[in-house]
Length: 604
Ligand code: ADP
Image (cartoon, rainbow, N blue to C red; front, side, top):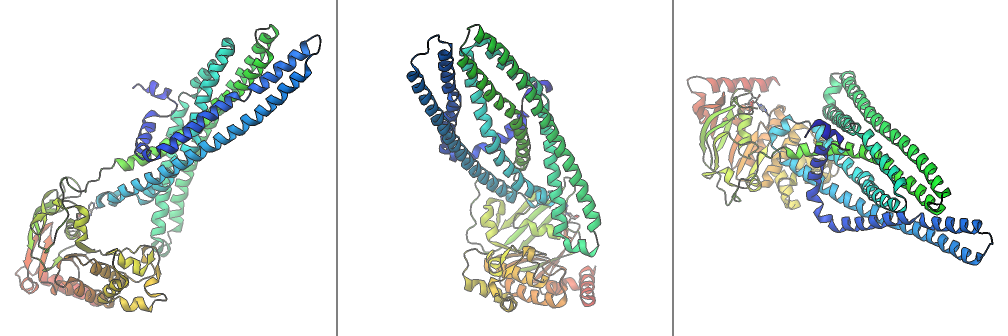
């Protein structure tokens, strides 16, 4: 499609189509509300068209009376006046009622669709892989989820609905005007054509400016989210000034783009005002002349003028609404962009739920890289029998944490296979696979809620007693009981009120509650002081009994207590054996690592 053709549309058609595509699937359930709304809307249009007719009859009757040489039948005129007055009240009342019904129906449908759309976008965002989330901006995502979906809903009700009503009213009134006087009706057509000419181009520019504003708002949310998320660091390094500077910079830019969009929309509206003024002047002059010549009745002129005014208001509002719709489609596009990101890790076709699991784990010639052509894991081959506790150690950046992501399928190997009980895990449904694996990460995230709830995230149907039992085994019961409200104590976002060691023990309790045959620990004791480390190690001892354990660790104690140690370097398993065996291995790498880690702990 040529650029000129594309600009001729009132709203960027590509953006509008993408917005409609994301909304459409959620409209199905609202069929009744939508058709109720449309019916009420059509009735409202009919009443709007009928509204000036009583006035026409009154004006015609009165002017006939005044023009008659002998005043006669004043009773008949009085009767008509009363009937017309009653008709006005009835028409206005019914118009108000139908308008109310249409607005309520569309508002209800709008909020239901927005709720569904938001849930769908959130579910989609949650199903996207770690790789996506590692590179995406969280604040911007939240902005799309909350702000953009809200904007779309708001505009659908406050602009989409009146726009449809206006277009129908305009068409019906045009038909009535053509029947009354085709020549004067042409004035309205010229006015509509003039509007179309002036709005060309403007709306495309409005969409572009709006898109920039929404993007800027996303950036603002990112800066705020990042700095508030690390407020401790901001305070400690006195970064307030620096961050405020970049915040105000983005803030100013968003303001400028916002003003630009508003300026363009306001310009378009005012140009429409002028067109409406000229059209009214033409109808007033031309129509008056026709009445004097006897070509039409004074009542017809009243209908014409009222229609022109009523029809031109929708025309003028079209500019306002198209501006708003252009802004909404910019929001729609931002949501569509998120929905277009493919879910790269999902259930494979024909995937089955995991049945009874023993816990044999195997990596078969596994290759993986975050970026094409830069492998992080290079042909890992290892078989771990059920119940074996394996520590994975090695230099930083060797790919250890990447290994821990393979089992719960946070990433998929680019080549090779990860097997559970001899079967490729890609053959299992994601949810059932993950329910058989407990992960204890380096930094445990606690969700807003009570401590009890946070442990229960391990298994949602666990009883209170099971939650307590898990906490006991994870050496968390005592400190929880000492808190003012015990298990009902509220922990803030990210668990800021608990120490690192306490958070890790909650994570272990969560994993214990899951009671899964396979446990993955990703540097679960890193960053803890010796006392907290020994409490967490004790908890881990309980957790890993008789479970296949893959522990990525920097802790010499944990490595020496394992059944087997894998030394990973450059994405390959370079040493594999019992801890004592590796201590006396000729290269001395493991022994050197153990003494370094011990020394580091003593110093800390
Ligand atoms: P280790 O746990 O042994 O320190 P990692 O598995 O965390 O090593 O990382 C291995 C390599 O992969 C490093 O070079 C790191 O920079 C890179 N890496 C880790 N996570 C990502 C990611 N999300 N995107 C791109 N590269 C990554």
